[in-house]
Length: 238
Ligand code: UDP
Image (cartoon, rainbow, N blue to C red; front, side, top):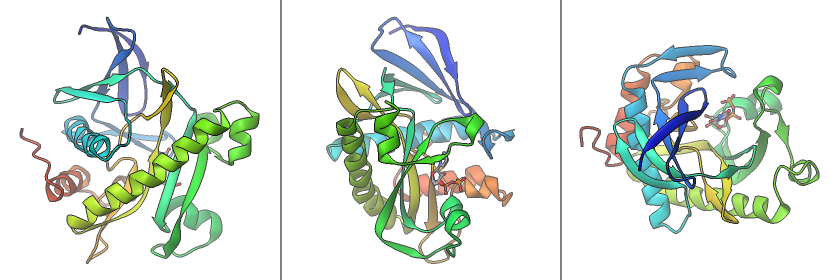
């Protein structure tokens, strides 16, 4: 496999073509952004930590029967993935109220949500990723109803798998965002799963161990990501 030209640079990752049109290389950079890219900083080791974190989680999800685009870890900050035709939507499941849900509905942070909620957001920085519903996705052709239904079912299945993994490490999976795409007609989990795209709290102290440390200027961002990783069995020196 040969890495070729850069196709796209997102806020924290870059995507490169390869000599195989079905495969891409994801490069995890040290850039960390918040507030729709209005604040960007470089955090040392972040690319490596998120790349290894994502590889570990994607492997666990695949073992649990959730199809993902992940193929292999290539280096400290690169992963080989399948080339998906991405749906321009973010699927969010929440087990506990936090973030935009609290701002939107005036709910107190920390309220348990039973059953967990499912929300959709349009990926559009210029519009600030507005909340949308399932009928918008179908009417605007962002995805077929049946593919969205599969993505929704997989998003909930991820919750069962990951809630258990983080609980064993003494943490609460508060919420998370997933993105899906199509590969030869099949709906696969794409993008990444790392503490950049989820909320994790220590189960006892409720300390925040995710990107909210960056958003809220709490410091110790990468130290927290590494702590989460070690607590679920990731060896960042491997
Ligand atoms: N999230 C994300 N990318 C986004 C928006 C949200 O990864 O563009 C994640 C976020 O980290 C959290 C979950 O999705 O784990 C729910 O985010 P929320 O809607 O509360 O928005 P926020 O408060 O992060 O703006």
